[in-house]
Length: 392
Ligand SMILES: Cc1ncc(COP(=O)(O)O)c(C=O)c1O
Image (tube, rainbow, N blue to C red):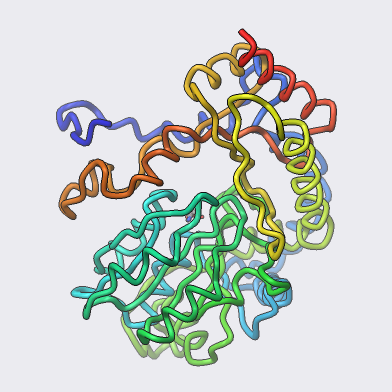
């Protein structure tokens, strides 16, 4: 794993559209947005009233949206913001976390988790994961220092972390908890929903998330009135009213347009999206249970996992990805390099071998398409191809 960057090479700013493109080759695709929004005229109708009324920022649809997602997370409050990254960053800011502080998190996550900590001015400190891909509470206590202010667990692939253990550690050490629940809307832990298990639950509505809008969007859930009030200020320039500012802050409002799209999905689609992902994952689990070369992670019975991603461990992973891609299955890797070994992490002084489980995981994981348009037949086809690969 190389950690250096070729500084003279041009940066490609336009690589993201690739992720929305269905490869003509892959019949069983990760990308499903064209099907999901095939009923867009219904949403267009709702957008008409926005255009006529013109309340483009923090309009009525945002209030409706916040009430809806607070209900899902069973929290008192929800605050719509510009993205999942902003949800994390603003939550840390609202908790008073900044320069000189440390935040403990997982090295096996998406860049935004760490980006939010660093943007808040704090230092990310990693603790290795367990076999379930989530931060292992046993490793958290070892890295607590006098500078530690918060734990930031990530509910990876829609499986909630072991929150009882994390809450006990936080309580004993007077630390805040911010949940990165960007993969985990409608997931539960011992019957309690994601977003309700910490000071602030942070969610993304990026187009490829389970609840997905037409661009960027996110939200924060909390039971703290104080935190809610601070977040409402932070997301909107710190404004008390049009003419008075309580704190010089940011602009990270959830667009009314995106709230309208999200309300449509919350009303009509999210339950089915979650249910279908769970069903598809159960199909894969059964079909791959005794498959040579494949190891399915533990599925803790006290949790409802919502499978933003369906990930298993695979021997000869890279060859398997190539084989599946060549056979019409859009398998992917989320992600091949852990955070502590990224070029961006050089300044924190981590090395290969520091987090062996995360490092091994990055070499072994493969994601199979699991979204709501994947059928039982698709799952069977994928499993058949995987068996074929290991029989060769
Ligand atoms: C684990 C995790 N955290 C945070 C984010 C950031 O969300 P967003 O893209 O909405 O900023 C993402 C996804 O993009 C994510 O996968």
